[in-house]
Amino acid sequence: MNNNKQHLIKSIVLNSCIIVFAIVALIMILCKIRLFGDEGNLTPEGTIPFSMFTVDSNLLLALFTIPILVYQILILMNKRKEIPFYAYVLKYIGVVGTSLTMLTVFFYLAPILGSKFYRLFLEHNFFYHLIVPALGIVSFIFLEYDHYEPIKFRFTFLGIVPMLVYATYYVINAFTHMDADGNVPWKYDVYAFVSKGIGIGIVMIFVMIGFVYLISFLLYLSNKLMWKKYFKEQENEKHQTL
Image (cartoon, rainbow, N blue to C red; front, top):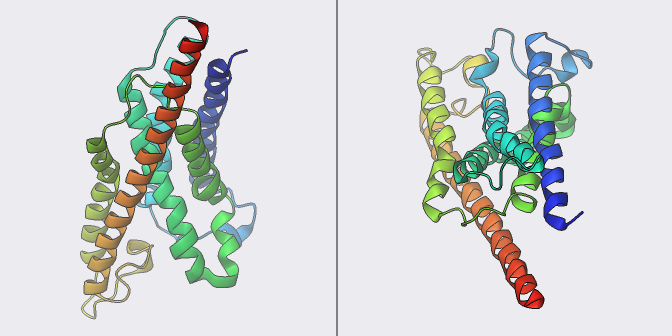
């Protein structure tokens, strides 16, 4: 079995896991499956699951992974020779979102919870905060770089679109539920962006947008470096056979 086929099979496995784990975690949320009781519950009662960027980003990645997985299976069955470029771009956008979720958990939410940071990785959050994002990063960077052209720099700005859409929703939802004293109920400010005041909340939103673009650029750069390495190896193999 050559390296290309090995990479293809590995990517199929990881992409399948992304979709399955995202669905399993969603079922756990909707069915209120709590193996660890209140320890595994980080959201206030009455919170709509789809109002959480964690849930939205993971489901978006699962959805955007479907096209590339279908084409990969077709290639493995010798019914197709290559994957359309749009499938790579969709996967890229999805990975940016879940990478933001995972890094926000590590560097923002974990310090807030302190010694109880482990709660961020219980129940469905084990999949949404860690497993699915990690699988997305690994598969995109190390296994999905054999497209016929590198992802263009301009596509890095597409990576921030899901966050921009969510930030718009988040700000409107939080501010429309703010009382006369400037307080917002937790279920409308689950990431505590507005809890310290409107000004700080707005600044935090812009910081997150800048952060997600940095993630988008680094993922683009990593994938491009792997693309260059891959095609350099392909050229060397061609020269050796001549």
